[in-house]
Amino acid sequence: MTTQVKIFHYLLGCLLAWANISVALTEDTSCAETGETHIWISPLNPKANTQVKIMAVSTDGPASELALIDSRGRRMSLQYRRRGGPPWSLVAALEGFKEGDYRVVASRDDKLSACRPLTIGGSGTEEKPKAWGLATEAFYSAWIEALFGAPPGENLSFPSLEPVLRNPERNFLHNYLGLNEDKNLPLTPDCADLPYTLWAYFAWKVGLPIAFRACGRGSANAPPRCGAAIVKNEFTQGINSQASFRNVSRELANTVHSGSARTGLEDESADLYPIPLSRETLWPGKVYADPYGHVLVLAEWVPQTSGRPGILLAVDAQPDNTVTRKLFWEGTFLFANTDSAGPGFKAFRPLVRTTSGGWRPLSNGELVDHPGFPPFSLEQEQLSPDDFYARLAKLANPGGLDPKQAYEATLDALVEQIETRVISVDNGEAYFRKHPGSVIPMPNGAAIFQTIGPWEDYSTPSRDMRLIIAIYVLNGLPEKIMRHPELFVMNGRSPEEAKAGIEQYHARRIMERGIHYVRTNGSTWKLSLAEVLARKPAYEMAYNPNDCAEIRWGAKPGTEEYSTCRRHAPAEQRMKMERYRLWFHDTRRPTQ
Image (cartoon, rainbow, N blue to C red; front, top):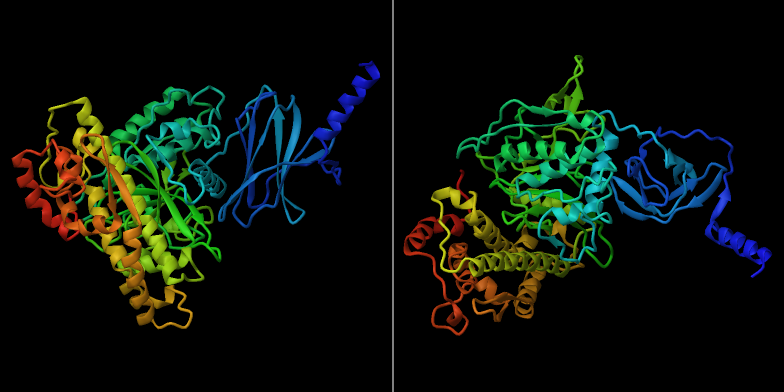
């Protein structure tokens, strides 16, 4: 090949690589973020010929284009993944770019929304945010949504938080500090620790302060109370190593527990405060605290379409450290009016600078109408459980749902919950295969719902109580149509006609759906959903991991299904379970 031909091919390659580049129409080289869109770049100091991730996050509407402009003014439109709303985000990745100065621009309807300089291969350190505010709150939300993103129908589950944060495709902040800081990072939070761990991890990477409190457990007549805020500002002081985060994370895990999220709604001395029930405030990353101690983190809103109901997705962690994405519905987001807790949707209380240069949490009064944070609101305190769920159903599906469509969404959520329980029971079986002949001690009283050690890891009292509630919800959908016809698209039918139709549909569908579980001898046993529902009374005493899997799925002695059972809980534990059975029958978890 001649030199002229080589030059021709080189130039042709350059033209193809930059086929979508055009000369910028303006000579204005200023680059600043002045509106409601902000651009974030990962890692903090990008290097040549490595991947550079870009995220544009908007709070006033979606951006429609993300582009890169080089030092010669040439513009290249970037391919991106769109998420959210609100906040809205565009995420793109650059591969193999050389050292140099660039500009990243986000546009909406051909008008510039935001611009940020990008230096690849520079020696300086990019400036971090100074404090929490609207931009960082929106960034946190978009980061959470990307972290747990997947098609709505996918069963998203992880053995712990570690594989999620170590995945650079999911975690926009992976190796953000350029220290290989995510390698072997130990992160196995349980239910109560998960929102705090995600929030602290983000603050570590981005360079923001956090605060948390030591709290009590509350009583039957009063929610938990907390002490003074423990402020951590280490992350604001330059780039911090993994060791720094591990120290804070360890202290955090040793301090917070389920009571930390159940604090009273009006309590000023609380890490979390209640927010309004609206799409403008319920962003991914916000926390849901149920009255009995379970905690979830909002992950994504999937909008309603003509062929698919809108849904709200959340993630939670279990005592065995599994992290799973779940649908919002009555079976997972428990809500009750109780003196022992302040349940509902909440946000982390932000910190602001003091005149002396320190940090302090904002009060409820300051958060009523603060421009940078979701407002403090006691709206949820005024709602009955029925009204609470109706409000959320309207937010997810403002156009209403066909009754069959609503039934299928509820059915899917219940099956998802049962399948997650299959994993929990299997985890218990795996423990006994490794420890044959052992017996896991059973705590006394309310401690069965939360303790430490193998009982916490492998028992399922909280999950089983939610399962019993979920069965009530599915069975009660026909009556819900009667109570709240405004949530459904009736197409000329009366509520009575719609109710009768769903009752018939329910009888057919629970015979068509089912699950499989593994028996003690390793064989698989199938249960129809009708069988699972009929065994609801058995789940009032099916949470003990010392019982075989067959007992935990309600098999009856003398049946073929039961014949493979080889393990039983001790008699004294069975007696305890009989005494505690009323809690599950009445679906009333005792206050710890």
